Length: 232
Image (cartoon, rainbow, N blue to C red; front, side, top):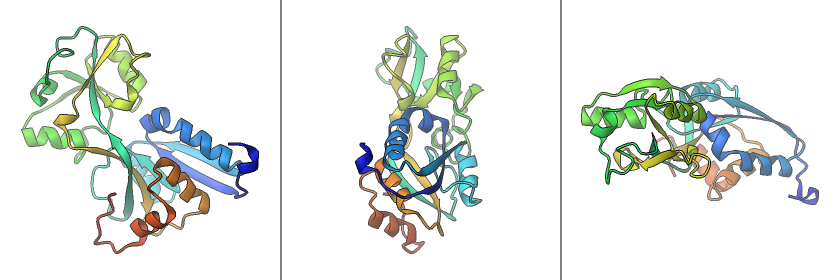
């Protein structure tokens, strides 16, 4: 965006996000925001979904972006800004890589490498395994998808990752199998305090994540009576 289109707002904007979002989803959005608001000091903080909820609740960040919010967090507003899905990342040539349809029992039988929050109570994977009355076996947990893929390459197990973390060209030595049918639909969430007063540039940032989240829409979702469903 050319300088003639830059806005003159200034101030500080502190944003929290998971590693996966910071690494794979946000770089282009943040670059566009910096170009549009050159005088806004952008501060980034990384954390797990539970940590990010705490950051928002305690006022450490203006808002947070996450992908698997477990628990109610009734004092927070949660605005959806897109969908995500799990893939099973395997060494190329693994017997499951070419299986027509993988079952949750197939996944349960594998040593898993996944996010530290994947099996927190109320998380998508935890709910799916609980419903099926299956146990899981994690051999390594990390919020860094690149590290998880490296250990898949070393033969430690199978990765259960956000599909955004897999790049067919960069990860050509691995195979990614869509297992989203085994889990409920995942949504990326913007977390805000219910009493948050958003600056103009925060509304613009939210709209850059999802064009349907206009200022009017955000205000409705933020400040409508608490009995309403705040999902998009």
